[in-house]
Image (cartoon, rainbow, N blue to C red):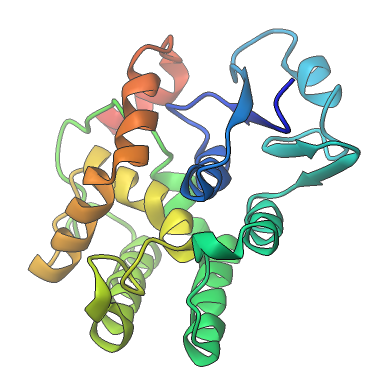
Length: 224
């Protein structure tokens, strides 16, 4: 058995699973992946065998069990400081944590209405003309947040704080949502999305998601 075991949900739909998977990939540490499809009739029992909360993701590291995406990522940052999952500068690190936590706890209207569906494509773009004001407000806040991070801290690379960090992992599913629902973005935000999508670990996840069975009830949202 590998030193690390990460229990995740379907790659096409489980945004919360994707985030710590990317952080773990960033460390370079080998790990075993246990994937539980979200439409498996035995899902609750399968997840319950690993997760105290009854949800995925869960990281198992020997006797240590960590659930919740951000908690897993923080644990990995402590274990692998050389991976620089957080910026080295203290002020930047505090900002990155605030950004990641805002994503973790916020943007409910966006997440509930534009659910993750990596290989789906909306029949029409989602923009101000067909999205409720609170969802468009979420989109504008995310774009402003990205622009601020890139302007202030992103000189060392294409990501929010230059190098890929937990903050980027937290926003990767948002990038996927913007692609799926064809959300029009300013040039700077689109450039950031393109950089996230081109990152090899992101492409690895996307390729694996393509081979999963689709769940029709999620695809219905694309035609709305």
